[in-house]
Length: 307
Image 1 (cartoon, rainbow, N blue to C red):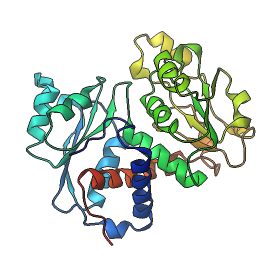
Image 2 (image 1 turned 45 degrees about the horizontal axis):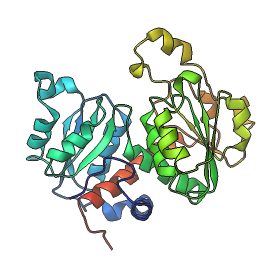
Image 3 (image 1 turned 90 degrees about the horizontal axis):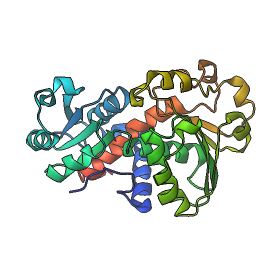
Image 4 (image 1 turned 45 degrees about the vertical axis):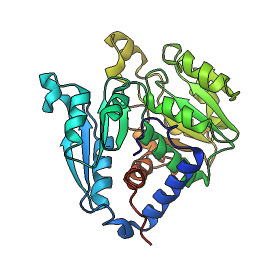
């Protein structure tokens, strides 16, 4: 039995196999409509989510399976004081696989250690978000024809953004990846990630506070919102929430084949006027999230791929 707790739980070869399966699902959805008949997915969301939770549910339903679970801690026995360990032991009696989101870092690892079914980390605090990373990799692979030999700009909240942390860990395993880290000083990538991942593997990167100056060198721009829920001080949030707003003028500085990604939800860091630009790929990215989660569920349940 395998879990997905970190984007590094799969080797590059296993990740490529998963992305290939997801691409085939995109092209032949009807072929996969019943591969999980009789299987149940539990979605344990101790923290609010729209896209991730519904994407998992859509994925399982598209495979012919069924779903159960809860969408907030208040609607679970956690409100009565039940531990994650006890919750997963109980859920293991009801479902074949589960996806868990929790505000505490490491919660998914605790769940996996006590679970008798595969556990998928759907986000744990500011730590990891591996299924979003798989979605990002599939999007980049589909749009650019592969992963590698590119400059990736990460913009916004790089301190608390778990999607950014997971993506850095995943992308450094591919050849000739260079990063431009665009953020206010207060929201820079944590030193431990720079030291243990970027510096340790001699990955080329630079830090800047200026989005305009970075635009022309980017192959991918990964925008993130400044997350109000991660701030203890509302004044700091208000001061930084509008640091970067991508608009038509900034897009004029970019390459014709530079694509914009965003894990969503956006607030105002991407102007709606950018939505009509063919390089705006964030809604397509959300659709890819369903395909990659379908592939992941099949892989962890060891479901045989239909002919």
